[in-house]
Amino acid sequence: MAGEEVVLKIRRFDPSLDERPRVEAFAVPLKEGMTVLDALIYVKSRLDHGLAVRFSCRMASCGSCGMKIDGRARLACETQISSLPRGAVAVEPMDNFPIVRDLVVDLERFFARHAAAMPGLVRERDPEEQESPTGEYLMAPGELESFVQFTYCIKCGLCSSSCPTASTDALFPGPQALSQAYRFLADPRDEGEERRLERVDAEHGVWRCHFAGTCSAVCPKGVDPALGIQLLKRHVMSARSPFGRKKRRGAPVFPNPNGDLLGQP
Amino acid sequence: MAGWFDPRRTNIERWAYTFQRVTGLAVLAYVVAHIGDTSFFVGGPFGEGPSRASWAAGLSVTESLLGHLVLVMVVLVVVYHGINGVRLILSEYGVIFDKPSRPDYPYRAKSLRAVQRHLIWVAIVGAILAALYSGGLLLG
Image (cartoon, each protein chain N blue to C red):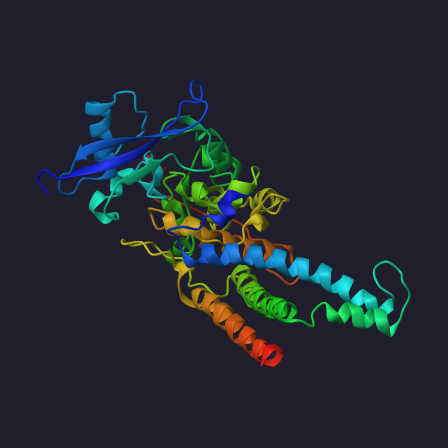
């Protein structure tokens, strides 16, 4: 290990200056346990201060350092160089996103689609309860299990960058937004089913997914968006069928016996 | 479009997706050609009028080694496209997946396991066997 080097072949591009992307190679001294993000930070601090790279937590929690490493979308902070094939490591920005500069992509549209999936409980029966809660919504542990894995999403964008449908249909919401739509449709506390179905059962909605499964293959948190999208299709068909499931009423509020949620009597 | 045909270093479902697209286009091309071919039976695509000669002329298009090889390829892509299509329909009904559950490290996506992945191999093996059988009939 001592004295060894790894070569990073980084795709560089500044849309305001460059006509086309170029690849630049940087030799980085290899250390045990070194991640691709560690190597990129070395490049930025020692070799080229102008390299644009986004990162924050360095422990696969924030989802900031998504990029394409050796042809596959990954988080740079959890990808150890020793886990990659020997030889130079190709580092590129994520696909399917506009490039801000070098390895930094613009996630604005991605977050807008997440917001369009209405990522919050909708209550028709008691909307004031969300503003001034008096208790908790009743939910069985089994009901929580039916959607909890989709709540682990860190919005890194790896799934949408790997999706072949997203690469060919600019209006497709992407696996992240669709799996979040299912997360709330499966939530027994939610009453926004009709509004959610209108958004996903559309021309460029859930039916554009043809189950390539790449979103789930690259997800760093085990969210499995492809599973969420297939279950979303089942939910849509069931809701639209005259023989399907009946419209659900949201879980009732269980009054807090100790007063309000701040513990005040 | 390039995204469809770049399934490197990823899961077999992505390959199945790409093949489904390619075989779909191939089946569409075959159906169009087949309608043109069989239209000789009622007089040909250019309205020459029904005759045994025009039907025989249409049939002769596939009565060659190259024509038979094309038909074997048609069997290959139709059987693959059909079986894989059934897999996709079943996946949309959510009947070939385990139930969602809390993910544990190291994360392995449930949707990329179990029955649906086996069905991809059923489609591949089924298509190869059907192509071998039809090849035996046409070329043997």
